[in-house]
Image 1: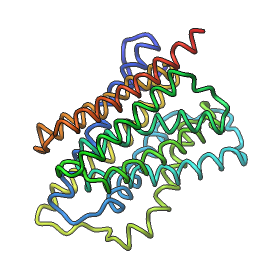
Image 2: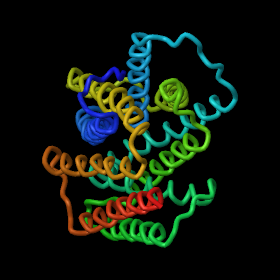
Image 3: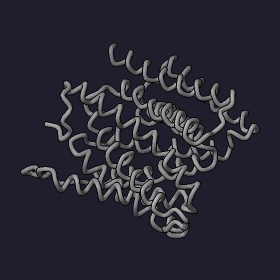
Image 4: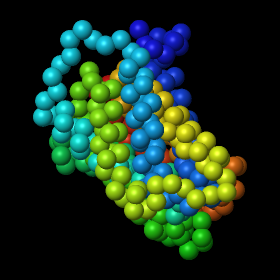
Length: 306
């Protein structure tokens, strides 16, 4: 019985979890943008506190759950997945916050989450031997075209190439984390792997965050602390728990489509809440990238049916 009491079938409950996770993840960048606006806290320090507080919350939840009678010994594979995933998670989260700070919430989120599945498809072809196919190649080409449009639109001020590059670095971290988990991860101990990865990420970020400045200097300290707590609790601890619970029972192709809620929601928040300017080039590049992700998901679904 799941600890989340939702009166759906297992798949329906999984879809509900994924929808909530996608919406929650879409708010992380907006909250980070507000932190950057009212304080001098940097992207590395914010990512560090997100992981540390999220780790504490995850450990608290694990402590309240009933423990299994017999615990499996964790071997070299578990440690490899945890350490590699933690380092990749550090790159993924920190570069994402830096991209949001550099080029805005809408573009930073679209580049990261649009390029991520494309990198994963290419990495799976090169490292795991998974076939890409003609439709997959077309989707990758569309994503590259979308990136090209975003770069070309950088002169208008809404898109900054440096921020786009940071988004691509974040997508690369997401790619490594996903491929490592797909290759060596164990669904039976997803919770333990998540906690371990967050611990590794926190240790990796600590020296860099200390050099950047761990404590924010601001006249609105209460607001900054509230936003940091929200980022750690909702789009981190809660969203990751819901994501892994939903992804365990829902097809990966469906997961890819549902997770498009994150960049769409982030783009909407960027315009409505943060007042970011969206140019025609930004819209075209966004449509090309998100359409490519949807194309990859459809290709995977057809392969599963075959």
